[in-house]
Image (tube, rainbow over all chains, first blue to last red; front, side, top):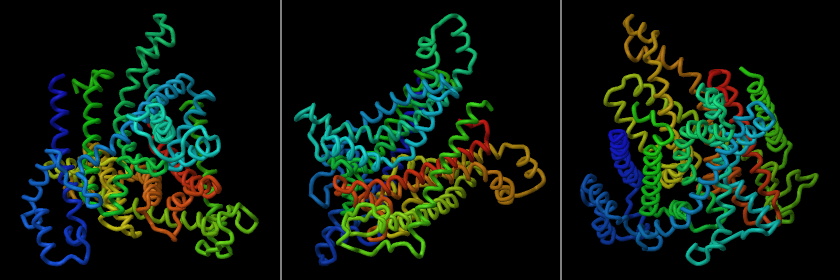
Length: 314
Length: 275
């Protein structure tokens, strides 16, 4: 068990390091001189040289990377070219907006997928199964932002149940904050629920065929107990891995959802940074989301044995 | 194969066929030589409702939505096709060589690929657009680089299991060198899984490209794409919802058709994986 955990944790380290290298290299790929891009075309020679020295561009590339990486590890990711704010605080502030949406969406998608997937597997071949599988396939083909727009149109504009634009932080008014988060979370969750439901159904169908399920039924356990104690844990293990991977889609999809619902989150920050070519912010957003993604998938790997202990011995 | 599975795949084929047909009709109606021009501005017809002249209505500049949707289909599918072909060629080459030769090169490639796969969703493509610029080839380049790791991973996995097969062993014993074995024996046997992957990927790239356009970092107006049409429709959602409904339905229909086609293809090539 311990060696399994250690192996997983150690495997994440080179990936994190390379993510850092990739983020660093990305900005070097930009054609032209970063200082020139920063200062604009009108900059004179002296200020360019000063900017070079300030950005460390006069040093060898490897030294530049070690300086950048050391600073990044200490939480210093530079200052935004747009606003002169510290990039670290900027990213964290914006992440506070995105995090609840992503968390609610993951929870919602997982619950919907587990329930519908098990239901469909139990009624394999019946109308309910057909409806769920087809519905899931349609859902996973809908672009998140269009689903968001349509929810906005129906529940925001036509029915007037939920607010259309804007945002209230949790710290100010929790009830109002939730009203702003409902539609974005549902829009994000529904699309991913399609993917997860199909996987949950497929793995539940496989598990239901196994002998120990037949044995559990034969010894007189009722359907609910068989499902909860014997089918769910085994069928959920592959779905759990996908939940970790889907979190990646959500962190990527948050950019479009925040654009639809005009939320000042991390995704929108990155899009604005791309439009303004604010490279320190682009770097920080990439580094931050990739790190979250790696860490979450590491955690998923670590709790996987709870549902399927066999993995430890492999 | 049970009756239940048969009816699901049959339903899926009907649904996929219907979606593809609907889309083909839109493209033929909107992009034929007698159709409306997608760029003609007519401010008298701003946000016009569907009419005999403009079947799907007109947008915020009075341009014909049917024509723009149809031309958007051509632009978006062109970008998706180029991306899929390029990413498959480069990612496939990396995957085959790494998977077949194994060793340190394989390990190095895979660490790099894993690191690239750690950038979630469209974020890598988004950042790359900042590097390449938002031209048509800039977007194809960004999307291609973002999808290469996925192809490389899948192809490497398939190659790993192929290289242990007897016919590869036979080729090796008969004296073929590594390059010949890869080209003559490994690559042809990868055609099935790669074709399935390319189909799914076409759908993903369509979604990514429309998301980039929607965010304002994709193909820029006045050239129509489904994504930038939706972005332009957003401020007028209240008074003219048809601006947003038509392009959105088209993206959904296209991705659904591709997904269902991919499912059918996978079932046909590998009946064990049937859902």
